[in-house]
Image 1 (cartoon, rainbow, N blue to C red):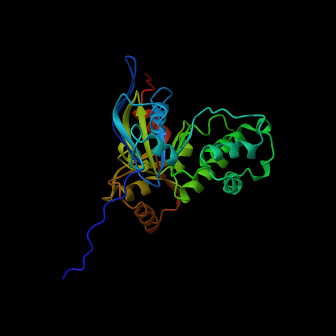
Image 2: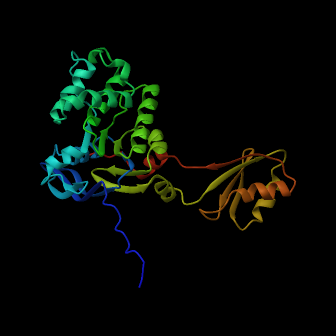
Image 3: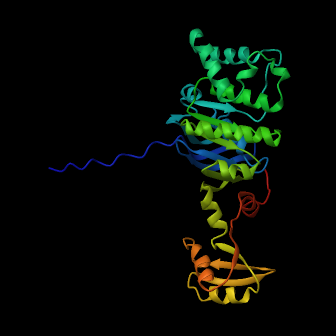
Length: 321
């Protein structure tokens, strides 16, 4: 008798859209968008202004109905099961209104009541989300007296008040100074560790590069790429480039390296050697090993890695609807 367990089905994605389209009159803001975001992803949604990012997030948050296609959140259809969707998402638009004459705790208590959190539980819930976003010391402060960065963190606390599984954040770092952005990104990393799925649209690509595990690039309402961050880099730069700087004359080092089958090209550039590796999985330590054994003093070895900003500029044309 076999004791082999039947294979388990992969978990359902947090977000899945098929042929998602949105028309505004004769203008197509989204065209046949197929997007999958896995549970636990910290997903970067990238595109120029007018590319369709906000339209997508508004459809996913049930504020806007698609013209065609379908979208599901945690297995719930955003049109047919909108109420169920609203209970599992937290949507933070790029600009949101705050009641500046209210105290921080009053503001969050109000939204807790909107989600029908029991009165006895709301006080602890408000305290917990304020601690999570680093605003515990501002409980009694008027919202109007908070800095822009603190108001953004308060907005994040608001969308967390009902403990949603999925966060939809539209340009949450917009207008923040560098310190406030770093603090916000640290909060998002902590939320992911807590098991939240997060979709974040942003123009600050260098931060998304280190923050997100997967990204999607959209232009003129159409998907250009969706997948791992490294995957889009590999598509744009299939060859790995390594730079080497040695003491003294670089010619002997170049001769040693050209003999390696793992290297396809060695080119002197200024006072360095530009080395093209033969394969994506080539171990660059072979370079250091050959040079050291050949009596060459190695000063620096670094890999030339294409950044997300460079990828974005290469794959998009800056076109909007």
